[in-house]
Image (cartoon, rainbow, N blue to C red):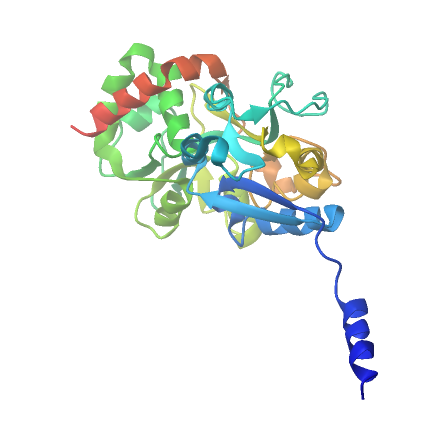
Length: 331
């Protein structure tokens, strides 16, 4: 009997999986970590490569993500912050919490190439008004038609103080209307059913039939085509063009001391991450794929014009432009 105990323990040790070699903490947004989002597959793929423990910590949306990083400061747990976009990178860099990525950037497939030394892109897409074709026969064909259209046809939008799509709409309106954006918001207010903190809540209300339109992306209909085999939900093509969103990840100064952070950024640019993006995050990949995109992506709206403010211009004006939105929407 005395010999059976160490033999039993030795058998357990041989059968047990190897302990994870280190831990990486990634802050991101809720739809990324949802069971239907890219997070679970990305976690599985990266852990298989690194032999480590990848922990996702999620907040509602991208602006909320930046707010959390700011509040936590140097005491924050994040090694990687994934889910900001170029409308927030200047503000994020100004916190002094991020470290240079130290990677080559010539492999990224985004408009104009990529030169940022702190943040790396992982996907991109264009904001759009997605509508239910069973509820709206003739969708708005421009931002002007959306603003001045039938107030009985409601839209759900997101709050620019917490949501990157919400901020994207503010910038879209500003890029088209300029100094007249406040007046445009006042007109649009009557069509807004509600304002949600993030994208997930807004899109959920839309698909439940609470409103026939929602602020989302030109790529959103691909989900319905591929996953649900329906073309009921469509993106409206706007004649003024569509505002571009490029989503990014950055390594914190804390993360720079964790070798897994640099490994994750390199992993993010390749197929183990990028193959997951199109049909879980429903955006265009920014890095290398191992297979072509589903043909459904070829059927999507192609913006007549790509709209995008420089990150520094957004940083200089974001508060004033969001305040303009708050004032118009609260009257």
